[in-house]
Length: 102
Image 1 (cartoon, rainbow, N blue to C red):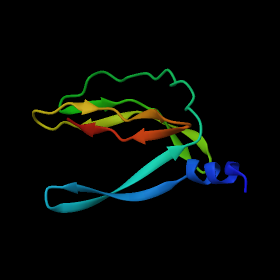
Image 2 (image 1 turned 90 degrees about the vertical axis):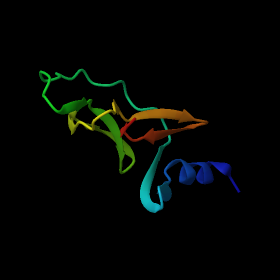
Image 3 (image 1 turned 135 degrees about the horizontal axis):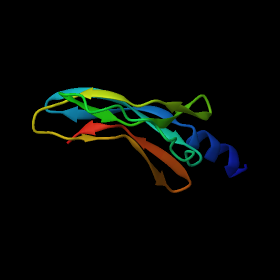
């Protein structure tokens, strides 16, 4: 049996996983793509907005291809900074790390 079909299936895997937040379980989707995203688009960043952090646009994986998701404002959380979502290479695949507050 060829490994190619198995790699393709694994590459396109979108699985629900559980992440523990305190004592409550929160479902989180794991996105895995078989190839690197295109370079980011040049995006006009609006002037600063009090109480909000800019979340830049990014490529998202949707139905077997990348689709551009434009940037948007995130309401600030006191004492935290916004870490934008990004793609990381994992072996032959790419995994989406969602944006989050740190």
